Every structure is written in C-alpha cells, then in structure tokens.
Image 1 (cartoon, rainbow, N blue to C red):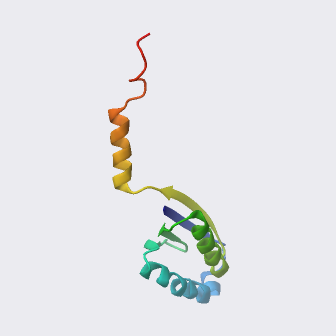
Image 2: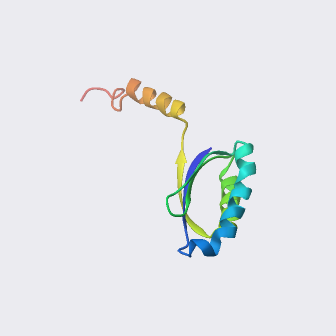
Image 3: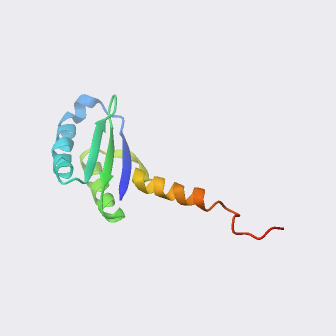
Length: 105
C-alpha cells in the first residue's frame, strides 16, 4: 500500500531540535533499506515528504507514531495507487462508459 506522507513539524527553533532531526534520519534508514520507504525528500525549511510502501494501515500508523515521538508534527497523508494499476483502471472506464449498458429511453 502506497502512502505519501508530508510532515509539518511544530514551529520550534531548528537549532533546538537538531539532535531529534539527526535521530529521525537514523530511524528512517532501516525503513529505506527494507523498501518500506520508497523515497524521502526534506522540505525547504523543515519537514519531509516520504513515500511509504507498507502492508497495512496499522503499519503506517505505527511508523507515524514513531516518527512523531522523534519529531512532533502534523501529517498530511495521501493514499496512492501504482501508476500501472491506475492506467489499467482508467482503461476499464474507457471501455465501459457509464450508461453504455442502459437500454435506450
């Protein structure tokens, strides 16, 4: 299951949370190595945009709680689908237009 998570950390002085920010990078490295994080980008200023590939909502929930324990933040979470799956779904919609199976009035 793919999720794009964008963090918005609490407004604290960056220098006051530098150690926590370093801890965050150490925390996420094993998730990258395991393939549960597909990409990670630091936002300009503070925060991150992370593409998670996890097996369940519960796994994502656990990771976000661990993340928030390191750096308290608000998270925007977007459930995503694989581009190939999205194209297959779109093809079925084009092939089966709504109303095609309805009898004429």
